[in-house]
Length: 85
Image (cartoon, rainbow, N blue to C red; front, top):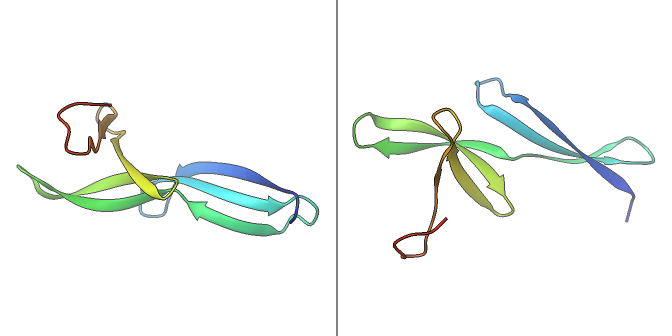
C-alpha cells in the first residue's frame, strides 16, 4: 500500500463533452497511479429527433443520466415501480 491522494479535474474534453477526471497520485513520488474519466457519452433515440447524444456520469460501477444542458432532468430506474427519486 502507498499513501496517495485524489484530484478531480473538471473541464471539457476535445469533442466538447464535459470532463470530470479523477487522478490518483502517489503522495511520496508524485507519480500518477491511476486516472478515471467519470463522464461518458452515449446515444439515445428520441421520439421526435431520431438519435441524440447523451452525457452520462459514472457512479461506482453504474452510470447516471442527467441532462445538465436543459434543466438538470434525471432518469431513474424504479425497478418496475411507478414512482420514485
